[in-house]
Length: 429
Ligand SMILES: NC(=O)C1=CN([C@@H]2O[C@H](COP(=O)(O)OP(=O)(O)OC[C@H]3O[C@@H](n4cnc5c(N)ncnc54)[C@H](O)[C@@H]3O)[C@@H](O)[C@H]2O)C=CC1
Ligand SMILES: N[C@@H](CC=O)C(=O)O
Ligand code: NA
Image 1: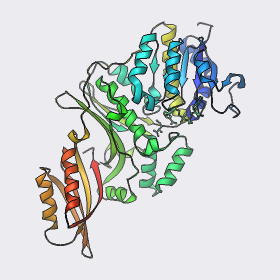
Image 2: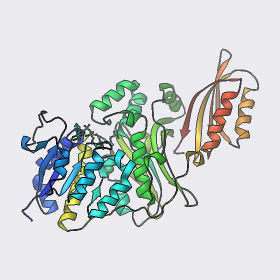
Image 3: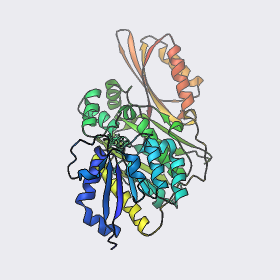
Image 4: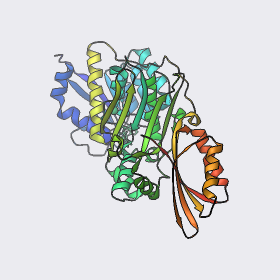
């Protein structure tokens, strides 16, 4: 074993960073044995230097992250501060100054991954980011490496722990939305600004990263159709239950049937209780990958939280250190297919539409006509009447999303439709 240690700079010492430091310290001997050289924490950049950080030598703490990555003797920079800047500049500076990078920063990778990969390649460094998608679950590496010889056609799953935690609590214990979000934040699952979770930005970033790797093309967060969970009500969840379904925030990345384009979307959807994704509880994530030769693969595990995320960071750290010792680099960006990303309107989906209507003859026929005019066929209709008013629940067959949203617009214009109580896509059937 080499005695000279590999030097690691840690940028950020919050929920994830503090766990990375703890595991690096407590598992130092095992990590050295697995890598073939000791790994030494050479500096920790923080915002609040006065905070007591158990197990970290105070002499390592600095508020000058730039100086740390410019030192020139750092082998690996672990970036766990999050956000676009200064993370992007710090990572690029690390590459310029001889370090490879391990990052958990999905927001940055989904915004500017191509430029970061280009910088890594230019300087001959590694850029690893297993923690950026689905926390502890090995998913980025299997897609980048294990499935590199196959053709992936679809990636579908739950990739945000916070929103899954909130929806699960609302469904199973009747908890309120804010109460469940506060709990998820206290448990270290939420982003620094939880809007990123509940409005679907975090899942959209992960979908962009997954689609890019799976289909060997470039997908940015702005290419991903995004709807969060802020408009999912207790009534939606109760309605899903009545239909034998539950509501999950899904990320779905698909290659078009003709192979000429891809789509990536994030939105709440009803899924049947019998579907494996329905039993994904709390902050767990689960992702199905469908590949031509492999068939269907399922990845499941803790999707958020300090310790699970640190596990993924440490796995990358070991891989990058091994590459350094072998004077090699791991896989870079693979974006040779250059497939365009089609808009949401072209995605084929099913809708569950709940309407408040007047309870009088002819209403059902009027509603059915709207569907027929858009060429969308109805799967089931359920009507419940009360005091001259009725609620009508329509579930459609699969149709282009544009036609389905056209239907909702047309329904809103009918005199007999008092309101569209909820619209949700249905998946997994
Ligand atoms: N918490 C989780 O479950 C997961 C988090 N991630 C990602 O990991 C990264 C870190 O997340 P958390 O640890 O949860 O966030 P956090 O907010 O707990 O920690 C980030 C830390 O970085 C520090 N920081 C910010 N700017 C800095 C700067 N310029 N110099 C030095 N320190 C700075 C902050 O003061 C904070 O302590 C983010 O990119 C996040 O998206 C990824 C997967 C799961
Ligand atoms: N906020 C994220 C953290 C992990 O990526 C989530 O809730 O999934
Ligand atoms: Na992961």
